Length: 592
Ligand code: ATP
Ligand code: MG
Image (tube, helix red, strand yellow):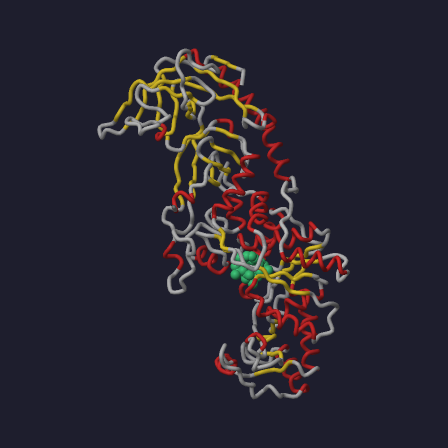
């Protein structure tokens, strides 16, 4: 912090530009390398799934583990999927096993290549890599069809012609058993013939289904002869128009797991009741192995949604600017907001894996993100609500060197210039200060961060009485030194107007005004959208950020963590910053 330079404005600007260029390169190198580091400092937290794996390895049931992450490419991944990714890929990493990425592409109408691509990008961005090739449920369409014929041959599946309404009526309810369909006793020959004709396209969409023949009186509705194939003339992203029948999820999923040699098939709790069906299918087919399914509770994050369908609605109805809107809980949205993979992985570690409710306060996410940004983000000054200050006893320009981070000298230094006109935050000045005020007031002194002590001599007002400018004076003997004979305790940040760069700064708040916007099924969750979730301000930033590429993280001192926007920053010569998170938790306080 020793270097002091006071030059004429022109020389200072030249030195400044050259100097900055060097330090900025250093910072970029540093932040890139720290972002690429895969290892989190914190150890895995034990959970019931890890205990099961430990026991399976100890007993010799398995020599190594194979997990899978099985998204349907029907939307962008959200924070709940991030939890599942960290769990499945994390287990494979910790136990030196494998984790497959498998697209569950059995619903052709809703799926797209764009979604499949974004999912791959998200998994990699989170810091994980799947084993070998990507798998697709559609890779197994031929095998799944052959297994269906095997079930028919064993008298364990039949073609049914009931209409969907009849089907519902025959199924019974939670309290009443179902009834057998009149078609349930068709012969194997007739079933095979009908199923082949379904495949050949002889029947209309929805006219017939293939059902597993299990038990219409089972207390578990999933076992009341579930449909396993349906007729649907839809173009598929991978198989095109080859098929007009598609296998159902429950039937497809367990067979795909078995064909891939998955050892632990981990899914969310709503599939607990489907596990008997998972096991029934595998028990009745000649498959290479019988994976075990284990369920954990879904993550619900407060003040947002974790349902692709509902997030799609927000996108379609233009309530947000897209899947990657920084207010969205999608991985793309969180990334654009400035959340880091390390922060999200740490969040997943902290929330844990269990069967208990996993309704998590946003404070937990923001805490994990903030901690990581604290360690990697250089600190610079920005002013988001500027008040002009004119220094009445300072001409020309001066500058002082300052570290980008007080605890990280390796981040380098930059020059903090001062000039006759400054910007400070409007709320760092109060004409009538409250008790304990440590910032600027009329006749009071503060230290300008990394610079001189300054006194406010006059507040200039407009006709309406608003303060529009301050006239202040510096104590020239206070650069890098305490003033003599008095203590100045307050420190505020500032920008030299001559060198500051204009920037668009986007301030985000929670997307919804209530913690669980979709809790009440009778009320459209859009009713609870927070009209103030985005505020765009024109502010100023210090010139040290000038060439920062998109996705560069900074702490704006005293204001929060910000990131250069992934899409709009450096388009033309615009500087666009997103507020990732404030410096302190503002949630708990507001809710209290
Ligand atoms: P959504 O209801 O948002 O569409 P989904 O479960 O239908 O989610 P999939 O693409 O099938 O979405 O999910 C892939 C994997 O991610 C599944 O194993 C699923 O259990 C898991 N997953 C989805 N949502 C969550 C969540 N909120 N918490 C934890 N895991 C989740
Ligand atoms: Mg699903």
